[in-house]
Image (cartoon, rainbow, N blue to C red):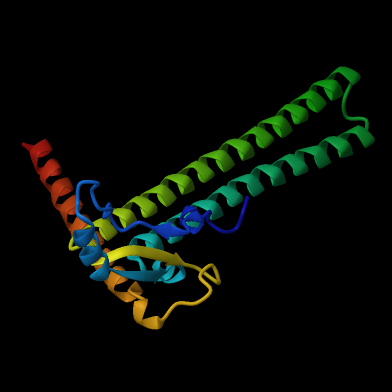
Length: 206
């Protein structure tokens, strides 16, 4: 199993802040005026990953789940190895009849197959959950950028990671604003979820 989370957002080369393309029936003068008032900005994806509370919590959660999966699989593997060692020792000491030995060997093979199937299943479930979290991250970022850019100040907001943008003036960096806004929105959403959960529990007791 991979040690790091799959980051779907890395694949995004640009993030369209909103649908700010001019309509076909607008005049050329209106288009020119609109474009002249718009700017281009960028956000540092690495900073979003490290400073966005939601992703911090997701990363911690998935690291713990990965550790639990590894612990489970290691325990299964250790038990299987011990059983195989005991069987081999028993064979050397002539403890089993041929029929018993065949039965134990078949059982060990079945356990090995089950352990392999468990590893594949847990790995697939893990990757699926990571993909869902990645999608939620991308959705939350897109949604927030649409709200952030509702005044259509920016014609485009780029996703900067590593050297995918060769040069950008630091004055175009709006990462801190986006991180602050994302965390504020996430905090508010968590409060709403907590209040809703409390209300549902109260209704259940009635």
